[in-house]
Image (cartoon, rainbow, N blue to C red; front, side, top):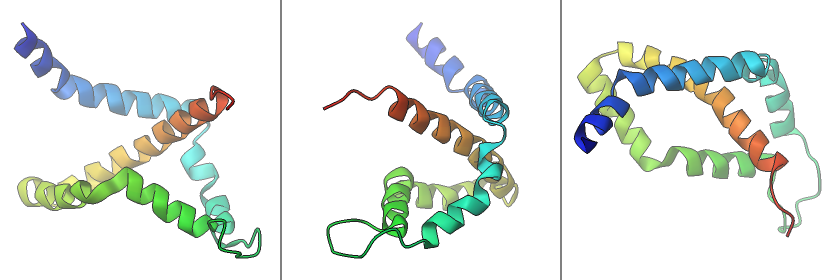
Length: 118
């Protein structure tokens, strides 16, 4: 029974649910991953404070965030996906990546909205 359930969850159903939720989050946030694309670059290059060694710059925070989300395994996973699936795998990675941006935005929004005070 458990094997049947895991086979069902890790099949095309999971892919459809994740992409469907990504599309729903994209529409619900009014295409946030495209609206704020230019704003992202202006924030990354802006100087908000003097570098005193106590604070991270916007670029350093971005690099730490990307390193935490991507990790080393995903880099090897891309190479394996291209080897097994061919160049069409890159297209689907971009599609899932765009939907994942909206999902990640909603995840961070909910975390900031419902965080508890220290």
